[in-house]
Image 1 (tube, rainbow, N blue to C red):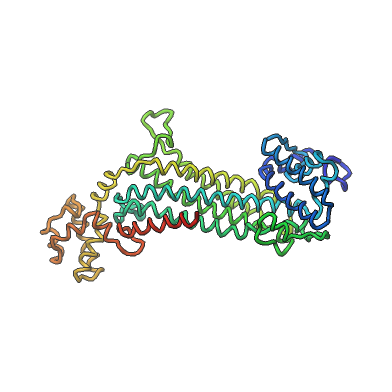
Image 2: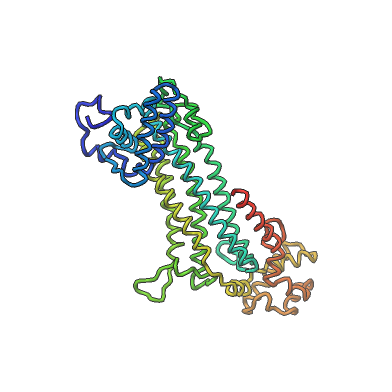
Length: 460
């Protein structure tokens, strides 16, 4: 029989079944991890006397030869060998002879594939943390360059209060900081070794799982063999964190799309990150942030897909679990690509400070400050809120902004108004008055920038 597991069968597998059940088209991405796990496994087998030292060395030499061929792109993986594990083992046997068949002593593809994915996600999670830090640095640099820039802050997409543009950008810094923390924390669950659990019940061979964990730099081993081969929580957690990261990327992308529109003109995206229209020559479309926004749905789909696969599975391993990989691979690639593109997109955007400043001078977003002004002079805030509401209605009807009203007009609503109200209402004063911790005042933003930079230094 061509199959390495074919001894019990009396006929060949139907070709349709081969095609339908084979995973080599996508799990070949795990080739290096599979060989890495096998090298540790065979070293342990030799040290424990389960196979002869010479056999262990021979197998390791063969695995290194295959790894070199994989690196050079010289390996042609075969569909009839189903998955990456059987392909590597077949290549090994072809390379060194029947002794290669001893590699699989004391393990199953069930604990083997789980180990491969732990190794893969451990590497990718650390790489994604670095990608997030590059995005954070781009946000810090833009914040420093626009420390004095003021723009309208919004709630309900209605102008609310003027804020520092640096303060606005740093809000995303902290979102990505939480994302990093979630990824970092997930490594605790990723860095647990399933190898040695066998198919589901362990093995009769006197293996040393702790030694494999040491060789592969895992912190611990799964204490339950059935859980070890069927656990995909670590992938679910990764997909969940990835989905949250994509939410943050999507929200930022949405703002870049809005800010770069003709209606706002707060920023201009670099030509290198925009496209044109095949019909309308004047168009400059923000396709990159739009696609970043759209990619979020793709990542969410990976999470929902795996949740659906897992929800009805009995213990232990089931073939359904083959569906855990494509969504994981696609999410990793989507997230890496998105983060790597977001960095230059942020670095190269031009900020229209004058347009932003004019926007805050032509609205009523300083209304809260008049209420605070009257409250500071002794008027109950709720009463002050009502007075200002009437002033805004009056100003709108007169076609004026709050800074345009005369002192006579102000005093017709309250005698508490004095000339200092005009200084109180300037956008600069409105922004700098928010001195509470975490506020948009210059002193607070400066402190926030210092804290943000310290986070990056600490992580590196």
